[in-house]
Length: 527
Image (cartoon, rainbow, N blue to C red):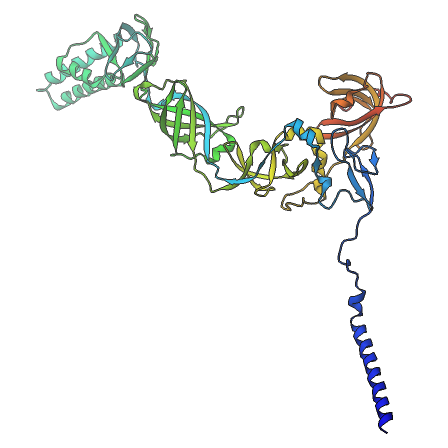
């Protein structure tokens, strides 16, 4: 019995082992059948490379166009570019970059010193201008100050006048004073009447601006003076003199104008974008070309409530002392208004910004010869730098020189239009706009060529993509090579884009075999 029992035990163990192995194999089967690259993105199939300017030209291998731009890869399913978003980038050859003089600078944190600079002019303090205008009719008997620009002190005689009315008024007052003295023994009513007459005569003299000293001298002596002397009310400069010896003057006529120039105004024209930083009471530094070694300190006393439409500036008044009368009215001045600074902010040079009026674009260098347009939101400006609020990260190099030439060379407008499909890989905070069509095609006849200006006038047929009728209009050429072979009367087929609103640029042109494009009835219809 021992032999058969042992055989049965061995068979049972083998069966259990096989069953356990089968069970374990079934449990591990899903993992064994999972492909190693199941999580990877399937590779896209490359179809061809298309012309970056939208021309009807493709290539099975990578190549560059005549301007040095790389052809754009087109994948199966209509997708363009690579995983880095190359369709929204600009690629220019190294040789072209050197010719254009492209220069970059990294966006960095810096403290923007907020100093507002403005041009100004010296003006007299309007509160220190005094006009000498007699309030009665008369004649100028004698002039003590006979030239404008002369310095005078307070109380200095300016001129003497004779007036029959003045002599009569003095005589009436003298008689009234004498009458008051004579009526001391009379009744109260008579004394009151005489005093009223004297007071009315005195009031008449005072209303004529006769000084108190002259009135007292007249009352004390009782003698009527034939002439009256007018004196300067302040110390200053005679800025206007109309008086001529022997002339007759009428009541209220200004004969002299004396200006106190011990304190003057600097009226500075501050640009509209800086006026929000200027506050009343702030200190100001003033320099004058006539005194390059001197700096005058003043204080802002008034910000005018109106804006000059022609210059888009707001006048700001700075008041300062004028020792020695160094500051002359109508002198030009340079004004610096320190308005304080902020903490360090992300800033880039002013020259890096391409401002179209509606959008502000900078070109970020991704690598040598490859640039990406970015829309940015800007803040404060100072000393050639501008604060970047959104669109560029610290350390990213931006093009600060030749960015407008890159625009002209690479049809930047089309690249910016590509931003509408989504945000660039570097930032997703910039509001984007849908792209416009990359190019439009038409046929026509060359009407005229201006090689110097790089323009061509073409009498073209209707343009369906723009719903244009047939017309004659002028186009710019993307580069000088397109001028080759263009002559008036030649029939051509061409493609063009709108680089800026109203600026139409031909990106490709070739001779057209056969009859010319139809000539419109009105060649200038629509333009």
